[in-house]
Image (cartoon, rainbow over all chains, first blue to last red):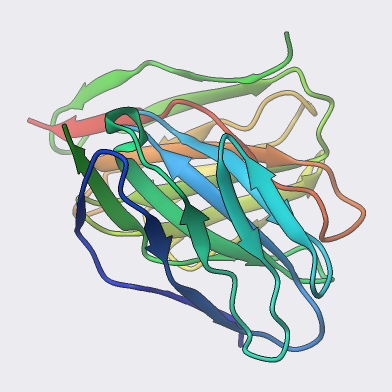
Length: 111
Length: 114
Protein backbone atom coordinates (compact mmCIF):
# COMPACT_ATOMS: atom_id res chain seq x y z
CA UNK A 1 0.00 0.00 0.00
CA UNK A 2 0.89 3.67 -0.09
CA UNK A 3 2.72 5.37 2.75
CA UNK A 4 4.20 8.75 3.62
CA UNK A 5 7.04 9.21 6.10
CA UNK A 6 7.92 12.61 7.54
CA UNK A 7 10.82 13.61 9.70
CA UNK A 8 9.91 13.46 13.35
CA UNK A 9 9.37 16.66 15.22
CA UNK A 10 9.21 18.88 16.95
CA UNK A 11 11.45 21.19 14.97
CA UNK A 12 12.49 24.40 16.72
CA UNK A 13 14.18 27.20 14.80
CA UNK A 14 15.09 30.81 15.34
CA UNK A 15 13.46 33.46 13.20
CA UNK A 16 15.13 33.84 9.76
CA UNK A 17 16.64 30.35 9.89
CA UNK A 18 16.47 27.94 6.94
CA UNK A 19 13.80 25.24 7.15
CA UNK A 20 13.80 21.74 5.74
CA UNK A 21 11.14 19.15 6.61
CA UNK A 22 11.86 15.80 5.01
CA UNK A 23 9.15 13.71 3.37
CA UNK A 24 9.52 10.41 1.54
CA UNK A 25 6.79 8.25 0.09
CA UNK A 26 6.03 4.75 -1.13
CA UNK A 27 3.42 4.35 -3.84
CA UNK A 28 2.64 2.41 -6.96
CA UNK A 29 2.52 4.50 -10.07
CA UNK A 30 3.06 8.25 -10.05
CA UNK A 31 1.03 10.00 -7.38
CA UNK A 32 0.54 13.71 -6.91
CA UNK A 33 2.23 15.15 -3.83
CA UNK A 34 1.02 17.80 -1.41
CA UNK A 35 2.03 19.80 1.64
CA UNK A 36 -0.66 20.99 4.05
CA UNK A 37 -0.31 23.31 7.05
CA UNK A 38 -2.38 23.25 10.24
CA UNK A 39 -2.37 26.21 12.62
CA UNK A 40 -3.41 25.60 16.25
CA UNK A 41 -7.07 24.74 16.64
CA UNK A 42 -7.78 24.87 12.92
CA UNK A 43 -8.21 22.54 9.97
CA UNK A 44 -5.54 21.81 7.39
CA UNK A 45 -4.86 24.20 4.53
CA UNK A 46 -3.30 23.22 1.23
CA UNK A 47 0.13 24.86 1.08
CA UNK A 48 1.53 23.61 -2.22
CA UNK A 49 1.46 20.68 -4.60
CA UNK A 50 3.34 18.98 -7.44
CA UNK A 51 1.71 16.62 -9.87
CA UNK A 52 4.62 15.09 -11.80
CA UNK A 53 8.29 14.34 -11.48
CA UNK A 54 10.65 17.35 -11.25
CA UNK A 55 7.74 19.75 -10.70
CA UNK A 56 8.33 22.36 -8.02
CA UNK A 57 5.42 23.54 -5.94
CA UNK A 58 5.72 26.91 -4.22
CA UNK A 59 3.61 29.22 -2.06
CA UNK A 60 4.26 31.88 0.60
CA UNK A 61 8.03 31.36 0.34
CA UNK A 62 7.78 27.58 0.81
CA UNK A 63 9.01 25.23 -1.91
CA UNK A 64 9.10 21.48 -2.54
CA UNK A 65 10.35 19.52 -5.55
CA UNK A 66 8.91 16.17 -6.66
CA UNK A 67 11.92 13.82 -6.83
CA UNK A 68 10.91 10.50 -8.35
CA UNK A 69 14.37 9.00 -8.15
CA UNK A 70 14.53 9.43 -4.38
CA UNK A 71 10.72 9.29 -3.84
CA UNK A 72 10.93 12.49 -1.85
CA UNK A 73 9.11 15.82 -1.53
CA UNK A 74 11.03 17.84 1.06
CA UNK A 75 9.58 21.15 2.21
CA UNK A 76 11.95 24.15 2.35
CA UNK A 77 11.81 27.81 3.25
CA UNK A 78 14.75 30.16 3.19
CA UNK A 79 13.83 32.36 6.15
CA UNK A 80 11.13 31.32 8.61
CA UNK A 81 8.99 33.68 10.64
CA UNK A 82 7.26 33.23 13.99
CA UNK A 83 3.96 33.10 12.07
CA UNK A 84 5.14 29.91 10.31
CA UNK A 85 4.81 28.00 13.58
CA UNK A 86 2.34 25.20 12.78
CA UNK A 87 2.07 21.49 12.00
CA UNK A 88 3.03 20.50 8.45
CA UNK A 89 1.63 17.42 6.74
CA UNK A 90 3.00 15.73 3.64
CA UNK A 91 0.49 13.75 1.58
CA UNK A 92 0.10 11.88 -1.67
CA UNK A 93 -2.93 11.16 -3.82
CA UNK A 94 -2.88 8.24 -6.25
CA UNK A 95 -4.65 7.76 -9.54
CA UNK A 96 -7.58 6.11 -7.77
CA UNK A 97 -8.12 9.36 -5.90
CA UNK A 98 -7.09 7.95 -2.54
CA UNK A 99 -4.99 10.19 -0.26
CA UNK A 100 -2.40 9.14 2.28
CA UNK A 101 -1.12 11.59 4.91
CA UNK A 102 2.07 11.61 6.92
CA UNK A 103 1.94 11.96 10.70
CA UNK A 104 2.77 15.67 10.65
CA UNK A 105 5.79 17.65 11.81
CA UNK A 106 5.43 20.41 14.39
CA UNK A 107 7.46 23.55 13.69
CA UNK A 108 8.08 26.18 16.34
CA UNK A 109 9.85 29.39 15.36
CA UNK A 110 11.25 31.53 18.18
CA UNK A 111 11.84 35.27 17.89
CA UNK B 1 -16.47 32.79 -1.15
CA UNK B 2 -16.79 29.04 -1.37
CA UNK B 3 -15.74 26.92 1.52
CA UNK B 4 -16.49 24.09 3.88
CA UNK B 5 -18.23 24.70 7.21
CA UNK B 6 -18.17 22.45 10.23
CA UNK B 7 -20.40 22.96 13.23
CA UNK B 8 -20.34 23.18 16.12
CA UNK B 9 -16.75 24.10 16.86
CA UNK B 10 -16.94 22.51 20.33
CA UNK B 11 -19.25 19.69 21.35
CA UNK B 12 -19.71 17.93 24.65
CA UNK B 13 -21.29 14.52 24.86
CA UNK B 14 -22.41 12.49 27.80
CA UNK B 15 -21.49 8.84 27.79
CA UNK B 16 -24.12 6.73 26.05
CA UNK B 17 -25.36 9.54 23.81
CA UNK B 18 -25.21 9.81 20.05
CA UNK B 19 -24.07 13.14 18.60
CA UNK B 20 -24.05 14.43 15.03
CA UNK B 21 -21.36 16.66 13.57
CA UNK B 22 -22.33 18.85 10.65
CA UNK B 23 -20.28 19.39 7.48
CA UNK B 24 -21.50 21.58 4.61
CA UNK B 25 -19.64 22.68 1.48
CA UNK B 26 -20.52 25.08 -1.31
CA UNK B 27 -17.55 24.27 -3.53
CA UNK B 28 -19.53 21.88 -5.77
CA UNK B 29 -17.10 19.13 -4.80
CA UNK B 30 -18.14 15.56 -5.46
CA UNK B 31 -16.09 13.84 -2.77
CA UNK B 32 -16.28 14.37 0.98
CA UNK B 33 -14.30 12.85 3.84
CA UNK B 34 -14.29 12.56 7.62
CA UNK B 35 -11.02 12.29 9.56
CA UNK B 36 -10.24 11.92 13.22
CA UNK B 37 -7.18 13.58 14.75
CA UNK B 38 -5.89 12.74 18.22
CA UNK B 39 -3.38 14.95 20.04
CA UNK B 40 0.05 14.82 18.47
CA UNK B 41 -1.07 12.34 15.86
CA UNK B 42 -1.87 12.29 12.19
CA UNK B 43 -5.19 11.92 10.42
CA UNK B 44 -7.21 8.72 10.40
CA UNK B 45 -9.95 8.24 7.81
CA UNK B 46 -13.40 7.42 9.21
CA UNK B 47 -15.71 7.50 6.17
CA UNK B 48 -15.69 8.93 2.69
CA UNK B 49 -18.20 9.56 -0.08
CA UNK B 50 -17.43 10.08 -3.75
CA UNK B 51 -20.99 10.64 -4.89
CA UNK B 52 -24.41 11.39 -3.45
CA UNK B 53 -26.18 8.41 -1.81
CA UNK B 54 -22.97 6.40 -1.64
CA UNK B 55 -20.24 6.18 0.99
CA UNK B 56 -17.48 3.79 2.08
CA UNK B 57 -15.84 2.91 5.36
CA UNK B 58 -12.39 4.19 6.05
CA UNK B 59 -9.81 2.78 8.42
CA UNK B 60 -11.66 3.42 11.70
CA UNK B 61 -15.40 3.34 10.88
CA UNK B 62 -16.54 1.34 13.91
CA UNK B 63 -18.81 3.39 16.16
CA UNK B 64 -19.51 6.01 13.49
CA UNK B 65 -22.18 6.46 10.82
CA UNK B 66 -22.69 8.90 7.94
CA UNK B 67 -25.20 9.86 5.28
CA UNK B 68 -24.88 11.65 1.94
CA UNK B 69 -28.36 12.70 0.86
CA UNK B 70 -27.19 15.95 -0.70
CA UNK B 71 -24.02 16.85 -2.53
CA UNK B 72 -23.38 19.73 -0.13
CA UNK B 73 -23.77 17.83 3.13
CA UNK B 74 -21.99 14.92 4.82
CA UNK B 75 -22.97 14.66 8.52
CA UNK B 76 -21.12 12.31 10.87
CA UNK B 77 -22.85 10.62 13.80
CA UNK B 78 -20.70 9.46 16.67
CA UNK B 79 -22.65 6.66 18.29
CA UNK B 80 -22.51 5.29 21.82
CA UNK B 81 -20.65 2.30 20.38
CA UNK B 82 -17.57 4.47 19.86
CA UNK B 83 -15.63 3.78 23.06
CA UNK B 84 -13.18 6.67 22.91
CA UNK B 85 -14.79 9.50 20.96
CA UNK B 86 -12.91 12.43 22.46
CA UNK B 87 -10.93 13.85 19.52
CA UNK B 88 -10.73 16.57 16.90
CA UNK B 89 -12.86 15.77 13.84
CA UNK B 90 -12.06 17.17 10.42
CA UNK B 91 -14.27 17.18 7.35
CA UNK B 92 -12.76 17.64 3.89
CA UNK B 93 -13.94 17.82 0.30
CA UNK B 94 -12.35 17.45 -3.11
CA UNK B 95 -13.07 17.25 -6.78
CA UNK B 96 -13.21 13.75 -8.22
CA UNK B 97 -11.67 12.93 -11.53
CA UNK B 98 -8.07 12.36 -10.70
CA UNK B 99 -5.20 12.76 -8.36
CA UNK B 100 -4.23 16.34 -9.00
CA UNK B 101 -6.79 17.93 -6.72
CA UNK B 102 -5.98 18.67 -3.12
CA UNK B 103 -8.43 18.63 -0.26
CA UNK B 104 -10.27 21.58 1.25
CA UNK B 105 -10.69 21.14 4.99
CA UNK B 106 -13.16 22.60 7.44
CA UNK B 107 -12.02 24.19 10.68
CA UNK B 108 -12.88 21.13 12.73
CA UNK B 109 -15.12 20.08 15.61
CA UNK B 110 -13.60 19.26 18.98
CA UNK B 111 -15.68 16.57 20.68
CA UNK B 112 -15.28 15.89 24.39
CA UNK B 113 -17.02 13.19 26.39
CA UNK B 114 -18.05 14.39 29.83
